Image (cartoon, rainbow, N blue to C red; front, side, top):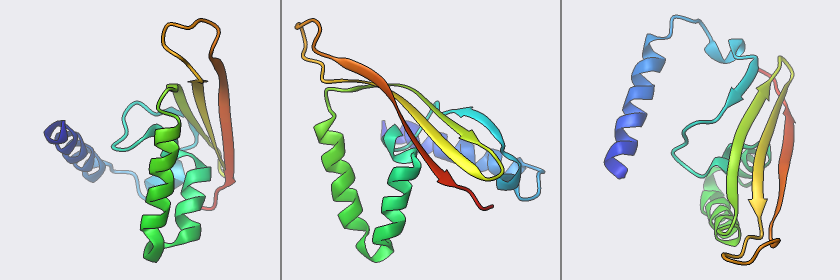
Length: 122
């Protein structure tokens, strides 16, 4: 629910405020599983982040409309593991998907992992 999302966002903000690490974004190398998101998981990939940057804040609605269309087009898909690998120079996003499913009809799906990457300069 919206109330539960607000609680989670507030808790995350409180945890961030308690973080003693100076410039924490500079110290997050490793493999990270996305367990919660306030939006669709696919939006955490470098591909969709680059779209937001390319259209800019003044055209944010264009990106949002495109994301909503993507969400509607993949409504029959199931998102599995969402992982990001962070190195000192690169962000790699891996999203496990099962797509093309038709309820009750066997062998109508495909599964795979969508991988996107971006150079990282923190």
